Amino acid sequence: MRRHPQGSLIAASVAGVTRRGFALGALGLATTGLGACSLGRSAVQKLTNDKCPKIRVLGDAREISVFRPGPSGGVDLVYEARLTARGRGCSMLGGHQASGGPEILDAGVKLTVVADRAPAARISKVKIPYFVAAVAPDNTVVGKRVFELEADFGGGRRVTLEEAASARIPLYFSKDQSIYKIVVGFQLTPRQLAYNRQRRNF
Image 1 (cartoon, rainbow, N blue to C red):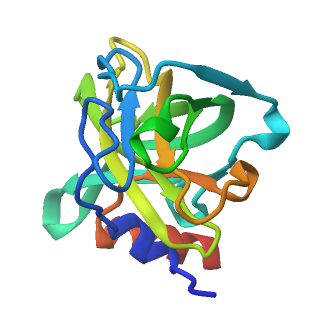
Image 2: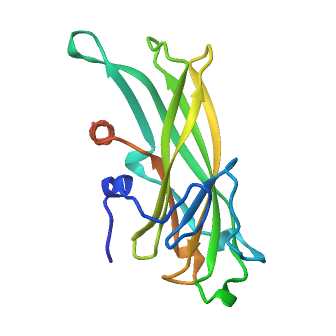
């Protein structure tokens, strides 16, 4: 079984993933508010939750800390954020038999992000990058898409944001939908990833 370390999943990228939800080869991803284009499949079969892919938040990517250069060569914290996620149902898209292609699983995920602005930070809005990835039964990353979530602090220090995303997964590996996984997390730089791991070790 091939396993992908957390750092490689954060960096993974798969060609053929488009912003508007097309499943071009590997995976189609879309967020709420982005018009999902038709895949030419006419019927939808809703599945019970136990048949849906498991939702996982990548351990090293569940938090993000953003710094800026400070006085005397140091750094100042701008904001920190934490992410949680849960499934919001899934369904099979019908009409695939006529085209001879694989069955398509449409799985939804709801993300909640709590962001805290540092006391000394003067910025009012930030864009927080996060990813949604699909992982096959052998732990191969079959598709990944990075999105941005805008946090508007206004005059406050904390803001809670909710985002809905969906993934369309061709079932090449297995027709058992429940053994696939949807993995989410913040899209981190190498320094941010190292910072998270260092904090976790203390």
